[in-house]
Structures are given as C-alpha cells and as structure tokens.
Image 1 (cartoon, rainbow, N blue to C red):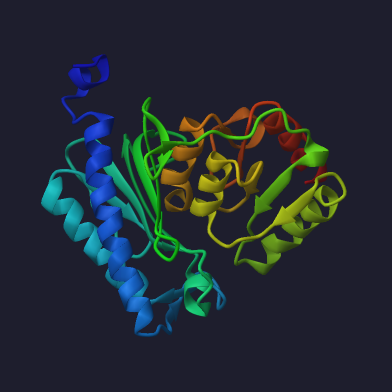
Image 2: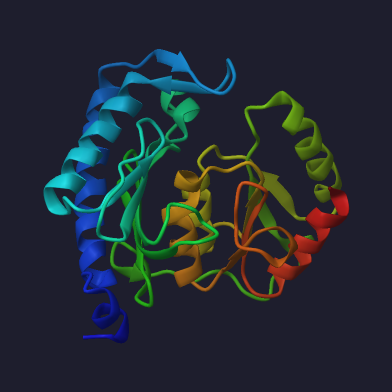
Length: 275
C-alpha cells in the first residue's frame, strides 16, 4: 500500500482509473447511439449560443447513476446537474459531452470526460487521481492515473519536446460571452504572427489529449470550467506536459496553458504580452 492509500484509505489511482474507464466507455456508447437518432437544442445556458441538448442531460444522468453504483459515498460535480456532496473526500468531475456544438452539427470532435479528484471540485485545490476522455466517433480512449502515466489504446503518450514557439502548432477555444471574445481575438491576432499555426477544434478535453499524444504542441484557453479540463489536464501532465494558469498559479477559469517544457514558458509569456 502506498503512502497516499494509507493516509486516505481510498482506492489507488489505478483502481479508480478502472472505474472511470468503464463509466466513460459506457457513457460514450450511449451518447453515440443517441446521436444516431438525431439531436436538437434543448436549451441555452450562459448565452443564446451556449447550448445544451437532451443527450447532454441524459448522458450525465447515466454517468451519475454509474458512479453512485460503484462509489455511493463520493461527490459528483458535473455540467448539467446540481453538485452532489459526498462524504468520502473524493469528487467525480464530469462533462457528459465536451464539444456540444460539434455534437449538434455532426462534427466528429466531441468527447465524454470523466475524472476523479481528491479534495473540493476546484482545480486550484484538488489533486487529480484518474481521468478518462473518450472520443466516441473515433473510438479513442485516452486515460491517465496519478503517477501511472498516460495512455491511448494501452500505448504510452508523450508530449512533443524542444519545439520553439515559431514552430508550434497551438490549439485554443473561445468563450460563449461575446465580450470575452474581444480579448481572446486580440491574443489570437498577436499569436498568429508568432507560431506555426492555430487550431480551434471545439473540445478542450480532446485538445489536451492531443497535446499528450503529440498531435498538438500546445493548448491554451481562458474561461474554461473545471469539468472541461479535469481529465484532460491530468492526461497531459502524465504525458509530460506542463499545465498551469495565470501568474504562476494552477489552471483555472482565468487561464489554462498546456505544453511541453520550454514551449510552455515561451507560450505563456506570449499570451501574457498579448493580453
């Protein structure tokens, strides 16, 4: 038994990963099947362009049911339903469909993200223990456990290294608040003159996994919610990425930056200079 297990009496990160993987894969199959039957907007959230579908809600309901069947004393913090307060000290942070607009339009870049953390459901306070991100359309399952590395289909993931900023392929995302987009557009306009190219793929969770897999050199975004990156940030870190926020703090709604060593500092500085 590790020191961590002895001090908490929780399952090991590897054991929690097994549970998270099973839940995420089952939820992915459900969402993919529902997508085949068609999808429409059920409601809007923060702004008229910030949408939710019935499948978002139904998928989260399934995830919550599966979590409670396996871990009835844990808390659950998700996008579509109220926070469930647990008693175990563990919290599940879930995004039933990350990339809902892609999901709505049939763009095959959306995901199910399931993470379990120790501590409160706040990125600046929690310790991520296990995370799984599934792209149902591609059939890809990205996963990581604390100290156990990151994998895709059982193969280890590794971020790109020694990539200078002017050779970096960088991804980002944009807020649903039009006011916030003004500042984001300013940063993008400056960065486009300093990097190889920019991508906006539509799922922060998959963007972080792409950094872990070396498909992207870096990812940054301001305005993310905890469920957008709980699993993906752990997967990126376990693949060797540096992940952090503004002014040397942990990632938060203010900013998340993920990249390999060296590039991380360069990109972080460029974002700060452009902001």
